[in-house]
Amino acid sequence: MNVTAIIFAAAVVGGTGLVIGLLLGIASEAFKVPVDEKEVAVRSCLPGNNCGGCGFPGCDGLAKAIASGEAPVNACPVAGPAGAAKIAEVMGVEAGDAVKQVAYVKCAGTCEVAKEKYDYSGLQDCVSAMVTPGAGPKACAYGCMGLGSCVKACDFDAIHVVNGIAVVDKEKCVACGKCIATCPKSLIELIPYEAKLAVQCSSKDMGKDVKASCSVGCIGCRMCTKVCEFGAITVENNVAHIDQSKCTGCGACAAKCPVKIIKMC
Image 1 (tube, rainbow, N blue to C red):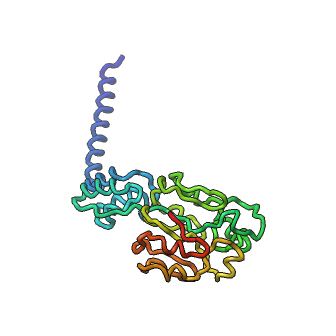
Image 2 (image 1 turned 120 degrees about the vertical axis):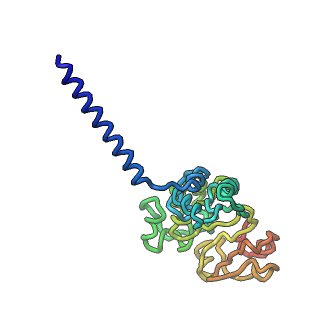
Image 3 (image 1 turned 90 degrees about the horizontal axis):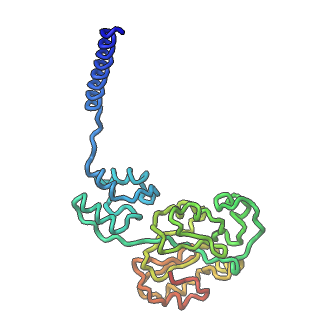
């Protein structure tokens, strides 16, 4: 056995490893990306759902935006007030008042009250059904098709199709906005969790045409606007809509509505 050769080989290997280690150390310092400690701290306060409801590309994107001052500390709808308070503490600012919101489906056209133009046998998906004649099988071109695109989009099991229309579970909804972005008919909007009343219709047709396709659709009669003392309800494009910032929940509009389409949330 040549001991000298073994020692030499070991020395070469060890020396090579030492040189490589030194070069890696130098490279890591030379190409080191600065880490924003606030961004890391903010990211730890976010839930990690990466739902995009905040308008940024996932929780990492939002954390960076908050740390740089481009987004408010309460921008994450999933984290809620508790999460906003933690992020505010990290940023050294006030969290502000965050109003909990939930999704609301503006359609009451269940199987019993909404008419259909034809039997649909295509893909069970609202987006796909939109390309069929009349933008889906329902007689009301603005109504919920009940094919569940919003259900598939929800990561929180907060929306389901019940009797032909999508229905939101307020207790599970985190207002991420995925269902809103998915609905091809723009039937879903965010309203305050504490909202008392909302108009469950989106039809822009004239009253006569509404009645021909759905027995509970808004006919744009404006009787609700005449009894509201707070200017909280208006009729635009033949459909009523409630300004939740003005509504007191008195119920006068709901009581006066002839088709009873203004409902408790």
